[in-house]
Image (cartoon, rainbow over all chains, first blue to last red; front, side, top):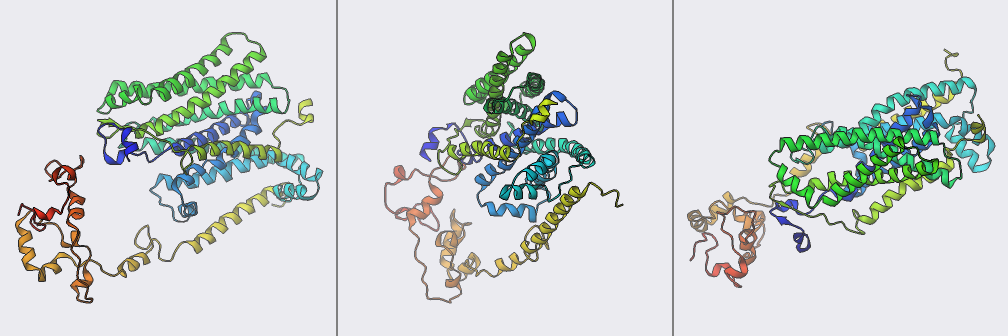
Amino acid sequence: MHGLMQGVQGYIYPDELELQWGVLIVLYPYITGLVAGAFILASLERVFKVEAVKPTYRLALLTALAFLLVAPLPLQLHLGHPERSLEMYFTPHTTSAMAMFGFVYLWYLMAVLVLEIWLDYRKDIVLMWKASTGLKAWMYKIMALGSDDISERALLTDDKVGHFITIVGIPSAFLLHGYVGFIFGSVKANPWWSSPMMPVVFLFSAIVSGIALVLVMYQFTAWYKRLPVRMDCLDTIARYLMYAFIIDFSLEMLDLLHRIYEADESFKSLDFMVHTRLYFSQIILQIILGTLLPIGMLALAQLVKLTDKARQGLYAAAGLLTLVGIFAMRWNVVIGGQLFSKSFLGYTTYKMDLVSREGLLPSIVLMILPFVILAVLVRILPPWPSAEDEAA
Amino acid sequence: MRHFFEHKEHLVRMAVLFVVGILAFVVFREIMVPAGFGEYGHFRAGALDDVRAHPVKYAGQATCVQCHTDIAEQRAQGKHAHIGCEACHGPLATHAEGKSDEVPTKPDPRATCLRCHTQNVTKPKTFPQIVPAEHSAEGPCTACHQAHSPSLS
């Protein structure tokens, strides 16, 4: 208590001293955003026939799945009693957005991602089933549901069904991340959050972070597997990243301009916060290093003729900076929204624990976990083109 | 019809898997949701009986003043007129019903008084509040104040 009081400036209400939503609730929108973004990039190839991004299609889907499996874990850790989470499905409160979201999550996981990955990989699964023996053959046989029909007609049907699922998947991905923004945007008592712009801003930042993640992962996996990087693919993803980022940044600036011009009773207090407690994470990390610099780097690659090697380096750096910038954006929304007093007369400080259930250590583990899951997934379902595809 | 399902066996199997999954959910839900859930609202109807079955612990001040008329009169004169007896003395239903020989212990005046009267910025300014160490370093508050009608005695 005494320690917490040292972080207080001005006057705050007693229940504002300690933050209720910590770093885990920062991770939650960050991770779901990466899922939605990676899926939307994958759907570019499938629905909008952007052939150049094809090499990343499967990697993007597996990345989305790996992150989606981890997405509810920060919430489970934050709330405790994971066994009770089932009750949200058994007796859902239909007026609660959070309760209904359980079904959106399940729908997106099972009916969209798992089904789309299964349909796309079915031919490979059957071939791997036939080519392996023992337990491995059994695993692939179960994954193929015991059906080895990979005739041209069967695969054509798979493609059609897959196309339909992707079309259903795009609004589902929008719903998935729009909801996360809605949860914050609908808190009418909090002027830092309460804005109908929130779901839209969250959605576009999700698309930006997902594209950046796939951009980085594609380069990393190519380097790790010593596979050639397709520069047309990389250039196209980088271009899409820049477009999405410009829209995202414009929306955030529109929100900011609106707040500055409107200057309601909370404005002075929030403005002071941005220039003091959030200066590093908002101005330096989110806006300068995490938005303007990567947009500038991506624009440079468009304007100046650079070598393949230089563009690769530029894209990797821009992707990583974007990932840091979007994390900072989530941090500023979640943590920033709890640092100021509703009295607008004071501020508190967020003190992050190290090893507690909601501390830094579990957060680091949660951030590493999707990559471990992805490493397992790519072993079972390799997303790299086969020698035969390469030849074609 | 048969022609329609040709080369779609794997899709039928997946569809069956989904249907089995949904059925399993419905069955599991039937087992897990307690009887009477939703009858009166978003809770288990039997919870009302469970709560009703709890023994009554507080007698309520209407019961207290039936015997303790002198204290009730004294209290009615002062600022504690609207404070329930059991707010300081604790739950005493068994005492009021005469079911036990339990004699209520007197509350420790200093601890009881300071629970409400220690200074706190969130309390209204008109509410009497003190910084205990400055107001009286030690000793019971009842040395100067009357507990039931807390003007200076």
